[in-house]
Length: 200
Image (cartoon, rainbow, N blue to C red; front, top):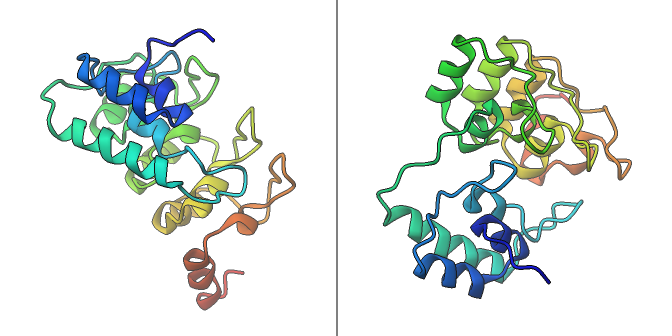
């Protein structure tokens, strides 16, 4: 098997040993892979699966290593030409700068995804800004069919989910490739809150 030069690829495999080797060899923890994603971003998805089944112990260890490396490095994130990459990092300032400079909110990154699809879900301000600029809240992922509302509901980011709903997203559509609506994959905490507000 060919070995990748990207730290993010080792993180995607959950290969804690390889991640450690690369960090000790001096690979920048902020390095972006061919799709413009950093290892720490990729690592959050390891072990989730289509049902969002949660992180494994190895994933938690992996995240701990990457987080520790992030705290102890002074190197800045690589600058990318893609709006989606700034959104994925949660870099609200850079997203704003790029939009003001005329970058199309629908621009796709090297993996064919727009900023609204890969944005940092824990940052509702980025979601709001992208929606204000005309981003489509129901844009489906080309691989999974999930839309941003699926991701926010699955990961428990209620504030971002509410911003998406206010911007035109729905809890009941579209269906992802597994036949699930956004409401079907919501965490218990999100579902409970929505029920108390009679939104479902």
